[in-house]
Image 1 (cartoon, rainbow, N blue to C red):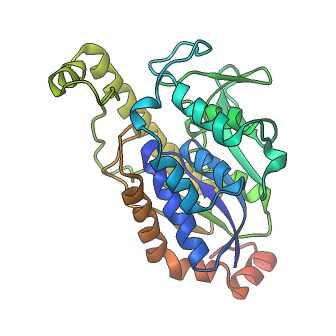
Image 2 (tube, rainbow, N blue to C red; image 1 turned 90 degrees about the vertical axis):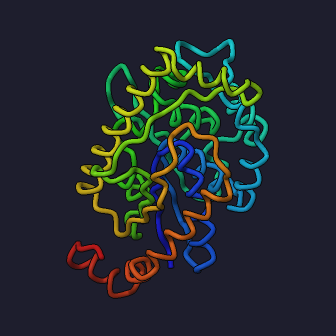
Image 3 (cartoon, rainbow, N blue to C red; image 1 turned 30 degrees about the vertical axis):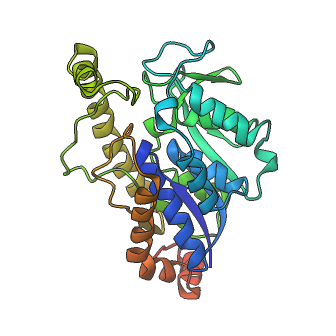
Length: 293
């Protein structure tokens, strides 16, 4: 039961991808290639590098989420930095490149100068991750090969087209973390160190900067939902897995295991469609008629 996976973006919601991977493996599905955007790119690169879902979960659980967003000297203009993320990537991935991966993998980013989608499938893995998760204005732009790169979710929240390009003959399973457009958008807050007293945290979240960030991120959320909706209609994945992560925001501090469990539950609910997509009847129909289950 071979498939290609497209892992969508969603910040902290992306921990659901861990459960999706774990349950797919348990059910006997063979992930032969993988494309990811933003947090989906982060999880996808670790998986393609040989980390099991359990190892990815343990790694993410070991990280103090308060330490992820510090600034480094090389960071350009941005509200938050990615010093903690960069340190984690350097420790775990070192100088590994896409050539070191056990399965084909690509992540997406957007060049803010040309406005073009950039598919990263060569070069240093840690650089690619920092580019695909670079939420515009919030995290630093990443410069690679002359491009100034930000989060791939700007143009392709769920990279179905990229996953299909990696394995044209396989069913593409899309893991979508965006809410439906009719869902209300929850407010956002600025991540602050957990050592600060609650009154100070509340005060930070009442200032003009925090309110402006809330408006900006809600706008990003709205546009990302719409972009995901239209891209999925255009790119037509064979199966969509949609974890119930509505109550989680991009920058929330979460219990990784709990969010991963939501991914496992979503696979359970989608098993009938998954099994139809990899059936011989579906494969024959796709080859001769160009249809998908």
